[in-house]
Amino acid sequence: MGMTELRSEVSDSAQELLIRKLGSIGELSDRQRDALHRLEAARVSVNAHTDIVREGDRPSSITVLLAGLCCRYKLVTDGRRQITSFHIPGDVPDLPSLFLSVADYNVCSLAPSQLAAIPHTAMLALFHEQPDLAHLFWRGTLIEAAIFREWMVGIGRRSAFTRIAHLFCELIVRMQAVGLASGYTIELPLTQTDIADALGLSTVHVNRTLQEIRAAALIELGRGKLVARDWEGLCDAGEFDQTYLHSQRISCR
Image (cartoon, rainbow, N blue to C red; front, side, top):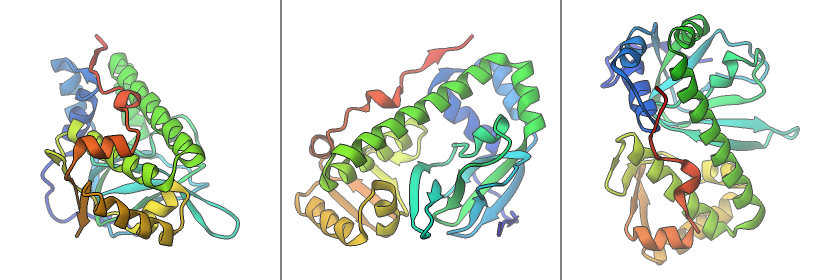
């Protein structure tokens, strides 16, 4: 899979990022935080455009993204790619492998990324010890399903301009929730091909639409950084209502 042992330290451990991610959707007790800190995790690094999970694999661990950006995707017969989700630090893109033995998707890095592998046995033991944590992971999975539904609506019924604006709003809000945004500025190392493959568009259409969004003074995008210059205008353009992200924190204790 092109993964190598991570030689340098990263600013956040897998355990700390999981705590931050779960803490953004629920309240964690000290015992739950301690249990997460005790999780076994092996750090690895990957180059951009490296498959982390391939369809048909039988993973024995889950992957926490520590730094970078990755996606879940499928390939059709002629080799074209459909991206079905983007994943930011703190996400576990292959969490389904805990209960579905064969991967029916691929996970790929979109930028140089740092990861942590946590054995299935360690995660299942954690759920047995702290069942309320399992509830939070389940909540996170349901939120991912809500995001997927919103993407389906976009691909089926929204214009290219609206789809791209909506995606940018979504990524900004998701990164704000876990402390990865500076106001309405985020690191976003996506190519136009990545955007096209996620939103069911051609790269030519994406290029033309990005020019239109820039011309409307809604965003700045370049060198791996996205800035929403007019947040309210971008939300209006994307028909963006963040209710589906279910960002309210709940108590699972």
